[in-house]
Length: 341
Ligand SMILES: O=P(O)(O)OC[C@H]1O[C@](O)(COP(=O)(O)O)[C@@H](O)[C@@H]1O
Image 1 (cartoon, helix red, strand yellow):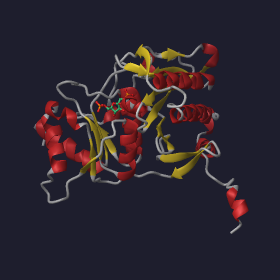
Image 2: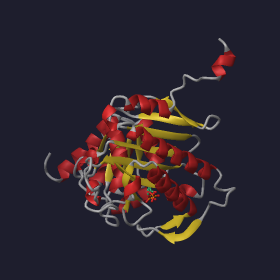
Image 3: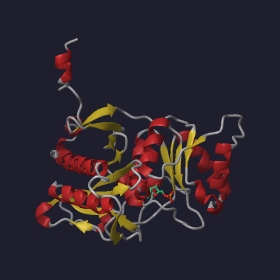
């Protein structure tokens, strides 16, 4: 084995090479998608470096402003939002941007406009930012009909209309997980190369898992199906072993673990939050798109999550997503409640 040559692994599958290969399957898109994605990847690298040095660079703590959700913005929330808005506009491939941090949708000026709408949560897991626990960026991409004047109606579409979705997790390593509609692939940032390398090809979620993930602190306000399902996770009636509880409190991190290990992640509705907490466009939809592409499923407590048609850009929805069989179980409990069983 020629170790010297091995050091220069120029045959590595970088995300750029991967997307260009994917792109060649869609000659009509004239490379626009890979150009857009390369700008999203650049944004992730910037935010990853800012998160890594947050404590050193005084990027910890509050920015002193409040966002449309009424949440106090963290300095890193504001920085990440600026990074992604700049990266997406400078790609010259976007026309509408919807960010968790901006009240209104951003319409890109004509001269810099392209045909993609990007919905994104620039930094998800705010409650974990200042204690260095894994956080992430979530994004979803819609396509506007050629030549059409973009309107906010172009993003108030079912999640199944998305052409791509992904997240980047800033944790012990920086991992970008992406789907453009033909499977899910994971890439890990090699800091020495500054390149995302394909490390998790064709991710398939196990059909059934041993983990459930939910904020049990809300249990007293849950509805019957959710209460029953969590009870079964702890005290299975079919002689199987109880599931383990894992809850990080950053959707990106909890969903990433669920995608790789299997199981179910839930943010149900409850008396306090009748529509749950998570936002449809830039949290529920991208994660549901990835889950389905990996062989899992996503449910709102009522319908398939990707069939939802949002009416507001910051709309919230309950969500149950993960391994196919685990989500089937909670769907059956909701169906029973509606007397459909
Ligand atoms: O603290 P709770 O109520 O369990 O909520 C945690 C959930 O809220 C979120 O932090 C919401 O996202 P933001 O941090 O982007 O507002 C998710 O990442 C996470 O799954």
